[in-house]
Image (cartoon, rainbow, N blue to C red; front, top):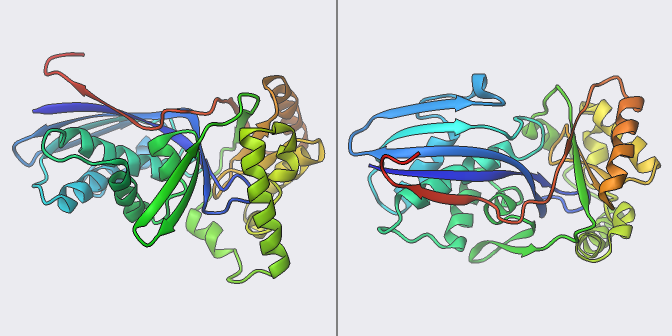
Length: 306
């Protein structure tokens, strides 16, 4: 029997203009402990957000991700006892599915240690095969601000450190949003003007997040996805617009419906909370967060330890 514990951060993708490209790891975590056995037992226990809706059989996304790695490296899938303590809200645009995929990949990495060596490129490839795109799994795996893209040799990423003056706050509503529905609302084509607009803002956003936080408001403007998705989550769009009118770099977090604010200092976040309390009928739970710089971690536990 081998036991490993993994911790995986929440993520916020897109960050306004960086659609399907930019992602940020945030200090909210899922923690999972998995033990392998020589037989075919499968025990899955889940606590925390979304626990009542998460399957506890072979269809569980973490279990499927573990099995995907074992199949890829041509090893037999062991029996498992999996305990998940969820901290990442589900269906809120904070990368819960990416966190589950990343957790499964890292659990498999830990259980296979000493037999199979999985490097960073392999981890990102395997996670992207399951998630469909790398913008959430890259920051979940590696932490910080990540730029993700796909080359001929597969998905790639570049990790960057975020300026210490950037202070994230996430507003989480009580309702959820389907990622597939959000994507279906976007047009198949955009104008050249809008494409150039987003290219310029994405380039500026890298500078704002790493060097010049005072540019964050302009840098987070977007014409590719947020307005198109607005009708499906009007309270989200209303909060984004109200915050931006007051000078805050507010964006839809991932596919929504949560709102991410990249404040240019910790002291500014309380004012953002006050605005959220005033402008919508929806109660928003504010999470004052930090940028996670580690990404997913794997720790092997000796048998009998706690």
